[in-house]
Image (cartoon, rainbow, N blue to C red; front, side, top):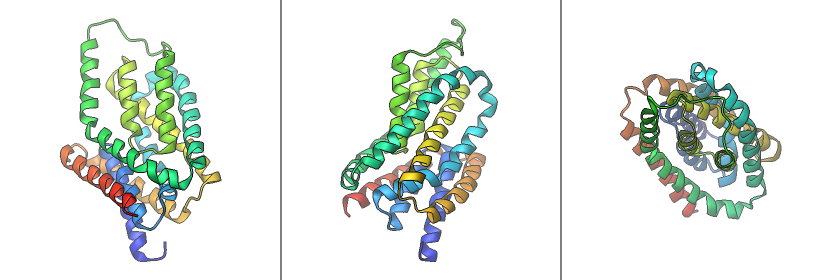
Length: 260
């Protein structure tokens, strides 16, 4: 970062990403285009963003700690899958040529925007499924998941390690279909798995990728502050307005990538 303007841009990226993650999820769609505006290339912006906004995932996971006590068996089963998938996705990014990544990333961002736009539908469908289960056979939080469910979580984790925007929505959709647990517990499990994917991806990038540590440091601090603020005001914030703004940032990133 060579100017006050770039420092302020990165600080705004962290605050915005943290705020959005704290309020609704999808913060990478805010921070990623702002990192591109600092002059980072597509892959450097991606790996720096992954490392920098990790603090936001930590805060989200801690926020659901009360709902995770019943999920210990699930975590023992799914944590290795998330860790393996995150490492595979990060390694896949490292071996992807820059020219190929620049072609792929606009498609990934558009997909993430689409997922983020339909996030309320995902949440509503998961909640409706929980309600339909009321009065039915009690769920068993210790029951093992099938190979198809584990494969779906692995695929989501690979995507998250490669390009993390939208990983929370994907995991919520998968877990909401395959689990009969209460929604807060599903959300807490989703948060921890997202954190694990991003931790191992960040470690891989720290060793093998061109992380801009100055930018990552500013992101880490401001994302933590923004996440706290987002969580505090999320109940009073018009959800649709926030969603429109986040999607607009994502589309701006696509436009920048396609015109450079």
